[in-house]
Every structure is written in structure tokens, then in C-alpha cells.
Length: 381
Image 1 (tube, one colour):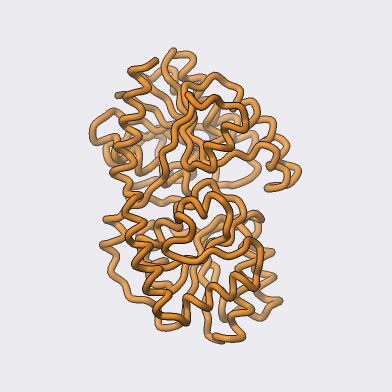
Image 2: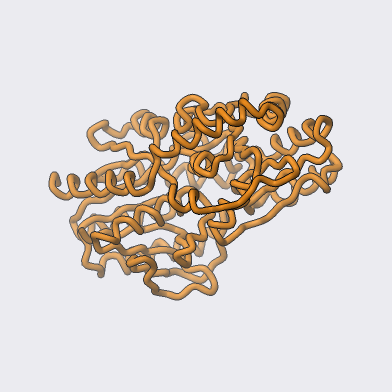
């Protein structure tokens, strides 16, 4: 097969410098497929990245104006990327195109349409009717764009969870145009990381710093935990527009010695090391399509506490490998985290169950399932 992935951001090296689940999934699926097929990535161009390079057999073409990674704004740069991605894609020899996020869907779809080949929209989450709630008034453009994207005549929508698949059904996508394949984890990478747990009780979180990730709830929970464990530490990996507000909250709650913002860490190995050194991983988000980092925490032998939203309950099979807390409930989050920190038997049980659950999500197996789906798509259209 000759496959194009159109994606807004892609790691700059084999070290897999990822900033979210979409990047992770695209990297690992492309890496596995490139062992047997011709794989091309069309991505936006960040500063200090070449226009073209090869990583693990994957051809990567970076286009559009040079622009720093961002979660909001940058409309002009993103529109220029979409235009240039399309112009590049229609010149390539390819027989299947996949778009991976809202910025890449339209160029991917129209490349496929121009070349009369199958188009796949990989869907992480459906935000119809939720854009303004999730990101504010600027979400109005996202609402319009998503409605337009979903109305296109895609060959298939590839959902990462039953939750997302059901929301696509509600959005009007016919069942015969839907396929469910989950995200995964690099089990070998996690297993080879040899570090010890920190001596001081430590909680970690890997998340974009945006409102709907509810990092403020976690910080408030740490304030409560501090009353029981004064030396408690919270390490937050990630960047985003809420950083300054969260830093102010830390200062107001007198948590300067307890909470550390680590920013974006380019090395995925280093991120996994921090997760593995921690005693508890926490994901307080109220908006997730899958929650890939929960699987990574389990594969790193670190039990989790995460919000009880449907996609996280799905990926954890109802809380296997950790504990679920009532979303946005600070006290419940604090209590569940304290339980894992204090009760060695509960912690041991969650760790063991989590390792077993993580084995279901090996990227090699998931890439093979994706490969078969692509081959069937080419054979049926």
C-alpha cells in the first residue's frame, strides 16, 4: 500500500517527541506500517525542522509557514498549511489517505477526492455542540468546521473508542462507514525503562494545560492531600494557555514546594521515566477521546486515578488498574489518591491488574489491525 497521513504535528525524530495522543497514534501506526508499506506523512512545519526527512522508513514532508506548536489560534498559519498540504498531496503516488485531526481532515479528504482513492477520517473525539463550552467563543469556528467535515463523503470514519463511535453515529454517520480500532502503548519501551519509585510520595500528570483538562481540580486535591502528607509532590508535564492561571493557584494555595510544572519534555522516554518513578498517575480531564496516557501509566507499573467520564471508564474497563473519581470532585480525587499512596495492598493489586490490561493495547497488534482494515478498504471500494 501507498499511504498518506495528513496530520498537523509529527515528532521530529525517532525519539518520538509527542505532545498528545493524536501525535502518538500517528507516529506508532506509521512506524509499524512503514515496515511493509510506503508511508508518507504531510505535517506542518515547526521551527528547526527540515522540509523533508525520513524517520524509521517514514517519509515526512513538512509544509506551510514555520510555526510553533499551538493548541489555539494561528488561523492564518493553519489555513496556509491546509492549502499547501493539499497541493503536495495531489502530486504524490498514493492509494489511500488518512486525516488525523480537524486541521488535517479537509486537505486529506480533498486529496483523496482529487485522486479518486479511499479517504479515512481518524476520529479521536466528537465535539459537535461542545466547542464553545470546551474552548470558549473561539470554538465557534471549530463547530462550523466539524459539521462541514462530518458531512463530507468519507470512505470510512475510524474511531478510537466505542464512546467516539457512538457519538459519530449520533452525528449521522452510517454504521457501515464506521470502524473501531483503539489506541495503544509501546510495551517494549515501557518495559525497558529501569528506574525506582521516588522516595517522596509523588503524583504526576501528563496533559495539555487547557481548561477542560481540569488541572485546577488536581492542584486543589493536592492542597487537601498536603494536610495528610506534607511532603507530597505533584509533577505536571505539558504546556498550554492555562499555565499562568495554574501557577497563580499554586502560589495562592501555598503549594510552591509541592507542585512543579515541568513544561513540554521532548523525549518520550523521559516522560515515561517520570511516570514510572511516580507513585500515582492522575488524569482529571472531563474531555477525552481515549486517554492513551492512562495505558502508558499502567504499562509503567504506576496505578492511576482518573475522572469517571465514559471514554476513560471504557479504556480502563471500568477502573481496572487504578481508581475512578467523580469528575470535578476535589475531595473524591484527594481521597482516591491518598488510598493509593497509603494502602500498599490496593496499590499492588492495581499495579498488577494494570500491567495485564495494558497488554491488550500493544501498538504492534493495533497497527496490524489497522493494516488489515486499510487493505479491506482498498479491496472493497
